Image (cartoon, rainbow, N blue to C red):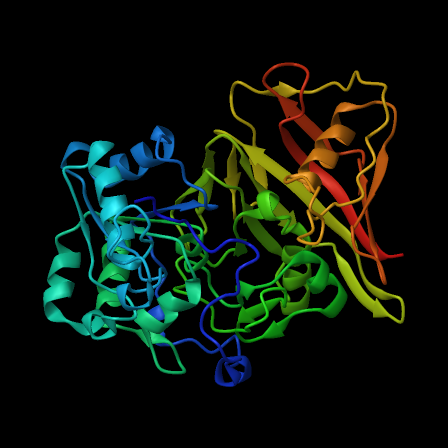
Length: 430
């Protein structure tokens, strides 16, 4: 059995109807127990696609949970429950909450945890979220891992009512975090850590063309969000996952602009941000893994709509890689000690990019397309701007990358641009 970190990008999110009640809820209204700011613990949030052999990330979660004495509670309620899995009886094909829970529990023990247990929560066991016995199980753990799937199932399972108040189990996890536990998650398990306006689905092109809407939709291309958000463990930015692998930079910029957020942590696959002091003025994170995290900065951005389409000007794109550090309060990046400023030496032009957001409509598309153009521009001295386009037309969109005076690129090999700080981004219809 192999667990899935989440639905394929072309699969519709489960859940059916637009949630008009959630759509109407004001983003500023939150229950009192969700406003408590965790200070003692830490978060390890992965952009999906976490590999079995990623000793960096599994090891960091276990280290923060107590090392050899770590006890990890595995929560896979974002997966379909056994009752909805046609392969529930086939250990080689099943992908439901129970078998995915066993999969991750096994991985954590293989990587050195003293114990790892599935916490019996899913759409078949919603009542367990208010069970004193399950609360006792949670209280015996030193760390927690939320698996992938559909983040809205976590809302259905662990939050209560239109005001999304904590169940007893979520309240216990929140208290454990505040007193030093580590809370980790991958894909949907990272998304659910979000505060207000958690993304609920959508693709970049349709988001740029049509804008976002509050709710949860059958159409997987429609850019939707949940105004009250997820669990609110991390509130300094919106969170997106599978970013480069699914071409989600466009939807992330659009959702942030539509909902009034000035920052997005756009997480890449098999890579984590390790967040210390979440929810305080001392919040900061480091990056662990082979890819990176894009910090999309909209502090100086201006969005507008015209007959031609939507435009965003003045946004910034920062891309952090392994062991880089970022201070959420000061917005400052500190590249890893083994990296130094890159002096561009290339003279070739930036390659043409006619599918900047890796469209689902393009069978020949390439993942990490946006990042590829950004890095190519950083590494050349032949030009200071480059324009890439969407695969779709009617309207199409141009994405212009520009190197302002304060832009810097960082490298560990002297040739390739790895970390990027302060690239300017403009998105405009064409």
